Each structure stands twice: as C-alpha cells, then as structure tokens.
Amino acid sequence: MILTKINDIRRDQQTYPLKRILVITVMLFCFWGIPAAEGQTKGLPFDRGVINRYSLDGLPRSISIRQGRSIWLGYDLERATPRKVWRAPKGKSGLAGSLTTRSVGTALFEDKSDDGWKLQQSGKRSVPLRVRYLGCTQREGYIELSWELRHESRKLRLRERVSTSGAGKGIVASRALQVEGLNQDESLALPATAGAAWRTSAGKAAMLLAGDKWIRIDLP
Image (cartoon, rainbow, N blue to C red; front, top):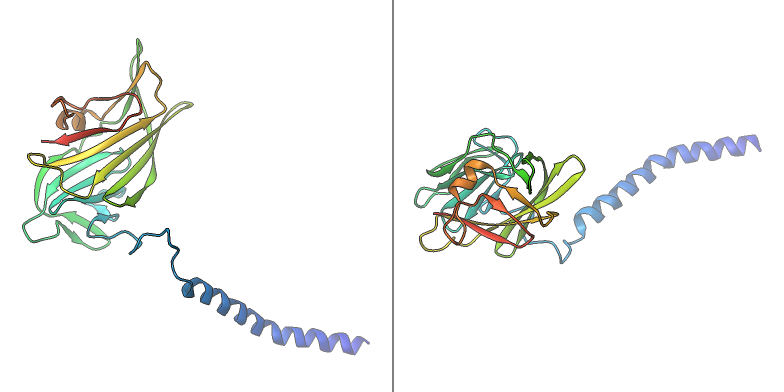
C-alpha cells in the first residue's frame, strides 16, 4: 500500500511539468489566437500619426494630438491644459524621435507657466484645484481627454475633445470643453495663460467655464 502511494506521487511529479506546459500553451493560444472584439478600434494602440502618447519636449506626462493636416496640440497632462501648439513643416510629421519626442515646426502658442485650474464660488475667493489625469479615448473624428479636479471633498470632472479634422478657416486650433459637478453659483477658471490666448465664439478670452454644456474655444 505504501509502495503504491509512493509510485503515485512519483508519477504525479513526473507529469506535473507536462501539465504545466500544456496549460501555459493553451493560455498563450487563447491570448493570441482570439481575434479582437468588435468594439475595439482598428489599429489599437492609438495611431501615432494622430495621437502620440510619448513625452513631448522633455515633459514626462504629456500627449500630442494632430488636428487637421499640420497642427499639433501638445498637452501637459499634470495641468490639464495645452503646453504648446505648433505647425509642422510642409510635408513632414511635426514630431521627431521615438520613445521621447520633440516638436518640429513653428510654435503658435506656448505655456510654460505653472498656472492651474481654479474653482470660483460666488462671494468667495477662488481656490486652486488638484488635477488627476483619467485617460484618453480615440473616437470617430476626435480625441477625448478627461481629468478629475479636486478641492478637499469636492470633485469635478473635466472633459476635452480635440477634433482630428481642421479647426476651420481663420482659426489655428480648436478645442471643446465640458465640466461636470459645478453648482449654480460656481465657475471653473482656466489656467491664466491659456485662458488669455484662447477665444470663445464671441471672440472673448476663454477665462471661465460654467454649467455643464460643451463650450468650444479657438486659438485665432
């Protein structure tokens, strides 16, 4: 009886590596052999000709999005705002490098400040908000970025859409912004440098967001 159990244990020890190899082989086959789900976008991860998620110009947490044929918007993800907008040289991509990239072309807007988003409440002083990047999504015709903005227990959700088509005649670049979580007596102040440069449809500086509707702002 004892000898039988010993022999059984030895057989199990000999066959265990084979079973393990078989399980790993099946897992690898399932991982690579199953086609992508219908909901996934063709060419994931993102098309680097349209959106580049490697660091830009030495800024670790950054992302670059091409609008139209030659305009690029480079975002500082830690501040939830464009750091640079530039035009690529004719016939060239506008980005150079691989794992780290640098902008190539004519700078049309730059913001190297530490300006941040602020919550403005009626009758109270504005308060700075902490930023947490939530991610990006590539949709048909646009890229959507999202962030969480916080002050103490308050949480706001900021979304931004960048059309991948041209911004329009007479406009360098265009963005659409939306914020969720504001009360009626509150507004969200854009980073000062960016707010002064970008314009609303009325041609005014884009300094404040209120409500929860999408608002388009342009770089003239």
